[in-house]
Picture 1 (spheres, rainbow, N blue to C red):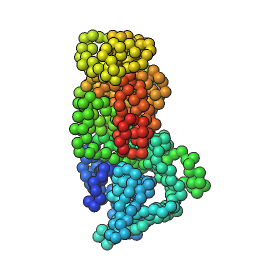
Picture 2 (cartoon, one colour):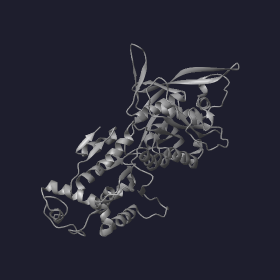
Picture 3 (cartoon, rainbow, N blue to C red):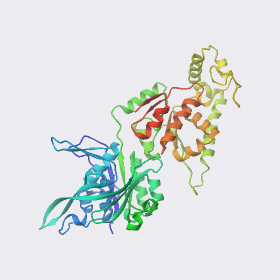
Length: 472
């Protein structure tokens, strides 16, 4: 059998403008592979990209003796990339040229990846999608190419959203097969996976996904299921799919981003990254953007899983908080942070119109407010959020935030620890969680800081609206 066990970096096409590069999983002949780098263009683990394209060819695309046997996994991958999306084709009536209009550069890059595999999306109506499929075979000892149009009847489509974390379409192929095509986050897809045989096994797929993440690439897992007609009518209740491979998108930083982030940090502005990416991907992007540096210690709060032997995330958060909060009780340590603390208190005094720092502390750190000093703090105590360190970064994931933000004490500890750190990365977070984190910073600190949210997608709208300043 042929398994999808090779990695392919698809180069940008010559005509369209530059866009994120695509890495896609395809097939090889099941032979032992060498573990070389995946950074070479036009190469699939040492195999030419044209070989992958030949294996993705549909058997009906050319009635001739095939130079290379086709692969079901590669075929379905090509079909999925060309049909499971919301991309619109716009045509210039004067020149006849066509361009893709997508909700995101990632979506466009995936459709372009399907075209590289020989499945070119040509357009859609309300109930069908047309794909141009380029077949290749051997005719009389010579290589021949043929492009045919394949029409897929679209029965249903459920777009990607932050709760489902996947997109699904139900189509009828030109051969009359009812096929459910799905792409989504690996954790969601793995929960619904019925078989990993087509992709060479879950262990190999995990290895490839980890490799992608280590390169800072955003990953998706692709799956499908062929349904009998009766089951197709109730496809929403279908719980399993056959995994055929994965994709990974390189989200290239714009020119000057690392320098800009460095300037913001040098100006004393705290930078928090809130993203839906996997933790490994988010961390690697943090390094490439110079948000993280090699001399930083990472405090990682990821959700524990059954049997991994780790304490609950709330317990690990409390341990980290208490470890660094104890610094506020050592005078020798506080001297290192004195300028930071004095600058913070000076800001409070200016906001309150006061000249006495102790007047601010007497009000519990809130200028202009009356009330008792918070439990466990006194006029001489410095809170953790008043201190700063250049050698600590906090990384927390969305599943952990579900527990943390539901607990008032844990939320306080997260805020204090995050403000103490030089940088914070929240990964695998939903739009609602992004909004709650902005609100936590905006309303949870005594000096009520000004927050700025910057986002480029629909998932960022809630946090943009929550901040005092929003850029989208």
